[in-house]
Image (cartoon, rainbow, N blue to C red; front, side, top):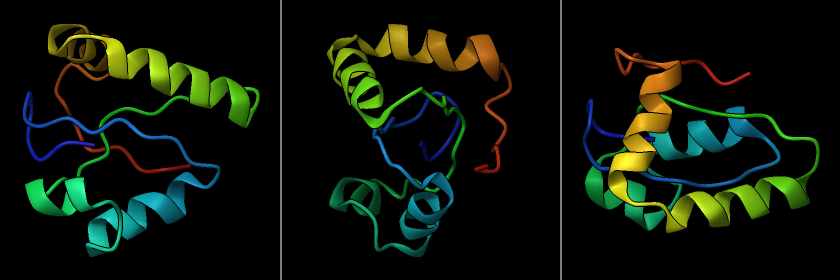
Length: 85
């Protein structure tokens, strides 16, 4: 999630993307998203298990900012808001 193109980035994992995005947009998600006004879902990936998703989340959180931006822009060059599935 982000607040604007190339803005503050939030990386997280959930078993229910639509619910979690709704929480963030309502201001009841993470304190980090609330603090920075992160309401735009610009990238998401569905993985085969919650364990795989958690491992991927941990890996992405270790990446630098440039690598995270590159990941978003490979699939969403315009940083358009996407709808959760």
